[in-house]
Length: 226
Length: 250
Image (cartoon, rainbow over all chains, first blue to last red; front, side, top):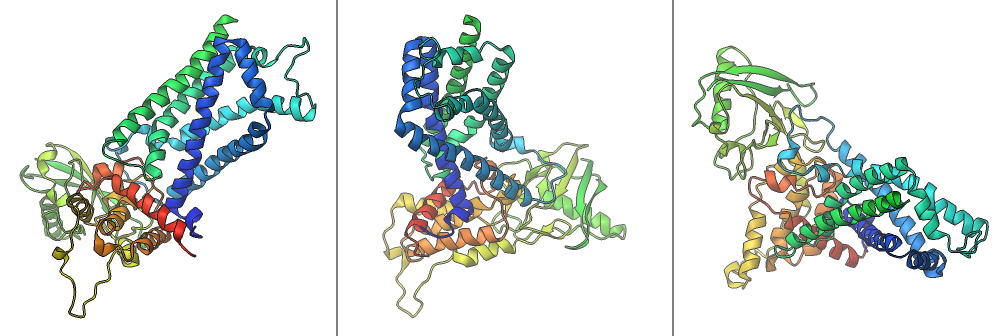
């Protein structure tokens, strides 16, 4: 591999896309597990216990995920700053909407909104989870009543209307981010084909609508069931 | 038609420029945009003022000299045309038209509406060429079989005139459409294979060195490109770059 790859514009673009692909896959599996929470509390508990205790998930995939999130964030900010500095004097009259979508031009804004939500999400779920398992050493996945705690914890978080509101808002931003990100990642890794690219764009729009909307619906189902 | 023009005036590369407002009357809708600027310059000269400096040469859309960011778009509101091919019928009587130079750190203003595009030339020098034996036994290019679809794509890429509209219109001032076209045109042809890997590495390296921004796939360049250069070529350059990076020994 060339020394300059990770420092070059094209190399960084490819790395940005690869981390994006990983996050797209992660989001999909997260969605499927969340979906279980409205279908069967038992199934959700079992899968959560597996994901929370399986050593491959915990010590191989989870660090990769954390790395991908941090990498995507830092590289995104680095590129955004470089891009801003490439045009020191702005146009007095500019019509970017004539040639590009709002989503494609505002990935940094939508990305930062998703990041802010991740802060809340970590505070709600990930940090307590790490605390219970690795600081208090309780790997049982059980509550004080001796039952699996995962479904109960999830439902509890969705009783607060403000939290549900923030959750919905964050997924709207995520949807905007994915509308460009999904198809853009394919272009970045060099996949552009007259026959397949239109299909990828359609798939990307479907993914960007269905997955965030699904997360929102799941949250609302828990909110109104409570 | 009668127009109000807001034109960027800047004495030289170091001076601080500003938009100046000019009134120009009786412009024919059949005239080209550059003819309209010629009228403005005649008016300025007759008034004893300095005419507006702008780049132009062939005035038939093939040389790549004309530029101009007109009313917020590179080469103006029409599609697949250069500024010299833009006609005043695209505007209405009473319109206010903003005329600005390309804006990018890598393409600094020399005077008024003229920018220094030698950064694009330096990228070409870094790899936009092929080595040909000129000792007298050069093989006739027509004798080398090339797939028709490859020849067509090479021609599509080669239609880039290097005007810099892609850089001007990109929110990141990225030159990737230009570089992708120049990398791709040779990559499809047998004559381009010898330097294929070094070409993409060197041209991308030079592009980064010149201070252009990074591509974020907004697709604005493809829309504003007067020659309709496709984003497919950027994807191709990305593939070329990845492949060349993997096997590079340094």
